[in-house]
Image 1 (cartoon, one colour):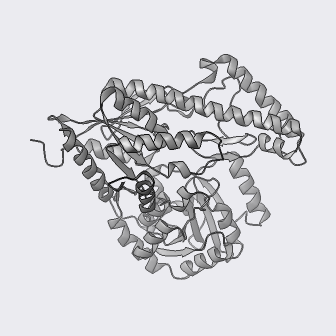
Image 2 (cartoon, rainbow, N blue to C red):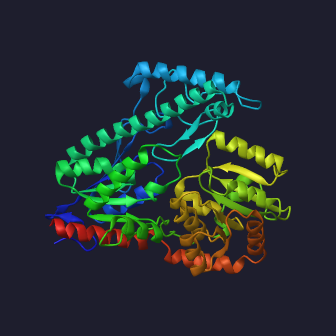
Image 3 (cartoon, rainbow, N blue to C red):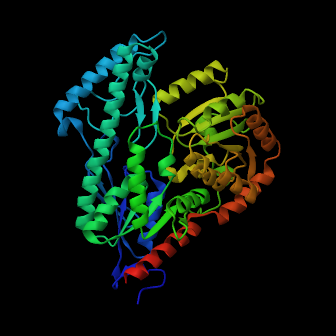
Length: 488
């Protein structure tokens, strides 16, 4: 007989759950919260992630405070695995840089972002790189490859195409190396369930299932087939096939927003709707108040300033440029504070845009804080802007983490008019929505909220008591109990 609440068991022993994620997992709050919740309910949980040694996350296993084991598997290192390809990579970079520097006025000289002697982990974007590469994630054009293409010459386009092909091949090989390592390590551990986070872990999850008989839980953090990536000739068909095979063989499906759940059920003919587990912060141990906030201190602002907060990654399609433009239509005492990290090839042009608009003294880049500290840091702002441009279906159906972080910070919200975001904002009365793509409407909406913020603050504090990870975790555990009941 298991203890109350400690019931994730198989045959009287703790269930073993292998959590697959294609990143280093150190700041993936959804993965860490999910793993901790399953561990607290009695399961033995091991996360199989990717080492990022140059970022301070080397190969190895560690026990987290939650009792979860985090095992980081070897990443693909070009210099070690294929030295001749490392030499080829350096040659291609030199050719791209040479062509890019001649490809039209104003092109910035190329600067490699990593020590070319190592050519180790996936090429990371920086000023002058051809792309911002996040494994399994979006690619942001920029740098010499783009500049070369804009030159219009056959040679420039050929070199740009060669570099683009290189990046695509590198990412594919890196993913394949993780798949192989995850299959070996997870199969050796003999899990009862495999929790596959996003479509890029479904292939190894299927292989582990074939080897061990483990059940699969598919956790779709976004609409994988319609996410924010550049057009690719082959990958969409492969991803479609993998997701279709994986989702039909999964014992359970989880996702993050109601509309993504409906899309998955409709597209794949699921008899049971996916379980909705939104990515919401845990309940605060103590109420967050404006007095706990650090945003003004980080930006060097006084209490007299009106502060609009943006929290999250600084990258394209997050409405940052539109918010900067909207600031030109607002009073001079209104400031925008950007809390988060971005690659230099995005941030540097953004700073130039800010300077050109005459907003240098009103837009503040303050860097990032630990994920657990975001809500408390934001708390002394006057308003949070939650803006995701609907550049792909996944973004249109998104329910951003920053929406819930802002609610937990007790902030009034100005949010883009997207269906699932709008539903939360209006149901709880925590702010107003604005028409996307319209900077003047955004400025007017933010001005209206700033003129009378207290009712929205009170609504956010009330909503934060209901919108917690603990409530979402109840649905997660309910699904796991159903699956394990069939295993027993």
